[in-house]
Each structure stands twice: as structure tokens, then as C-alpha cells.
Length: 375
Image (cartoon, rainbow, N blue to C red; front, side, top):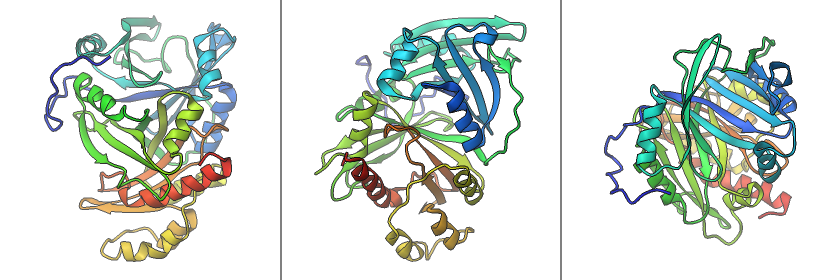
């Protein structure tokens, strides 16, 4: 629980945690080999490390994949009696760990737990012939855990217990994690906003209410939290009252708890990336065609280098603000349950999150919900 520590101003610099990066995102899944193949062949990630029976790991199989600065870990249990198997049975495939690179894992644990975080494990070390990895961990929304990691003295493939993999791959241009979105229950958004501010030193970057993100039928509210150096952006969503069930409520119904809704991955050429991903079988949402009928008028005072006909053909969305523009597109759910999905984003100055696209995107999501009988 978050303690009743007096809140600092949301605009005050409070980067006591000094997060260097999103080190990796760890998915717990039902079949690690098949999920690895999906990210490898579908999204163009390169498998770089493996842990399993052959490496002495008797508990789970695990693959590490990378694309640019993005690192995913995909793990599945061998036996039905583990925490990992229980997690997968309840939630389906989902993100368990969002791991943050820091210089001092002991200080990160001490500072966050002193401010009210619930600890998972204190600072510890794992060693092999390649060096030492240091970690500590705290809880956040749902069953998601933040691990703090210091790998400055480690030269192995990933961490002890993993061996390197060398598999050929065809990159699709995914370069970095732009942001990671969490869905929480109605009435809990501000609780977790305060958690990230008071416990982890994040600041509120943007806020969207049900007037910004709504259609005739459903709505949500969202606040974007960012760490002091701007390298980690964690929007928090909650449902808002509407005539019918929102996408956030649908997620919570099927994931059974708050969790990571989507991961936005940045690229340098979204036209190339989306063409590649579609050719490999990745499915994306399609907004109503009326969106593209009014797009030239919306952009009449904005110069974008991409061709609008290609943007329409691929189903990419465009938004802009005073600093520039962005291009974005959203995948369909990554599994049979309508839970986690992926966003692909290319920024040209804009630091927004596509506010001008919210209505069209929501309408597309509602069409998908209606097909599933969940609207």
C-alpha cells in the first residue's frame, strides 16, 4: 500500500530513482517456444538467449529476444504447480515483469519501499563466469512487478542460467519501447498515479478524461506518468461510465486483474514497418474509412513527409501538436483473449499520445468488441 506521505507537486523534479532504461519486459505464457517464434518471425525480433532443461533450468523454458533497444523475455512453466503456471491459467499470456535499469538496486529498493512500495525481494546477486547481475523488486498494479537491475558488471548473453542463441532474423524496424500502458479498475487510476509519483518519483506528463476518450457508447480516462529523465513513460487507464462496456472493462473481464494493456514500440519508418508486419501475418485494427476522408483537412496546415494514400492504405493514424506530428497503429489482441496488444509509433517532434485519433480508434475497438459479443 502507498503510505500517506505528503504528495509533492506533480511538476516538481523528484528523480531520486535515476532509472536509466527499460531493461526488459518479461512475458509469462503458455508455450514459450511458440510465443518466441511469433515474435521472431512475426515482429522481426532476434532470439539471443535461452534457458531451459538443457541449461539446468528445471522450472521453466525461457527465450530472450531483441529488436533495436527492445528486449522481451518469454517464459513458460514445465509443471502445473508453479506460480508461473497459475498466472498463465488465470490471465492467459501477459506481462509479469517490467524491468528497469538502475545504477544501484539496493538504493532503488530502499528508497521505494521507504515511500510505501511493497517489496518482493531485497537486493541480491546472481553470478556465473560472465560476471554478476544485481536485482531487487517491488509490486505495482495487479500482479505486475517492477524489477530493478544493474548489469554493469555482466558480459553474458542475458543473465546467469541463459546460454546465447544465434538465429538468423529479418528485422522489421522496431527500435525502442516508447511507452507501456497499464489498465486498472474504476476509481484506481489516481491511486496508481500517486504511487508512481510518491513512490517512484514520476511526474504527470498528460491527462485525458472521458470527454477526450469517448464515443456514444463507452469511455475511459488516462494519465501519463513519466520518470525524471523522460526515458520511461507509463500511462495508466481506468474505465469511465458509459452506455456500454469499454475496452478497459473488457480487458479486466478477461485478464481477471489489472495489468499491462499494450506496449508501444517506436520505429523510424512506420510505412516500412507496418508493411513488413502485415506481410508476416500481424493483424491491425482498421478505423472507419471516414477518418481518411477528413484527414487532409485536419492536416492542411501540417507538413508531413509521408504519402497520405500510403497512410490510408496501411490504416495508419496521424496526429499532431505544437511540437510536430506522430504516426501510430494498433494491433489486434496478441492472443485469443482480448487483452494485451501492440502499438507501433513513429514520432516527428510530437510528444503526444494521439489525442486526435481517440474517437476513431475507440470506434474501431468497439466494432471488434461487438464481433466478440462484449460491447
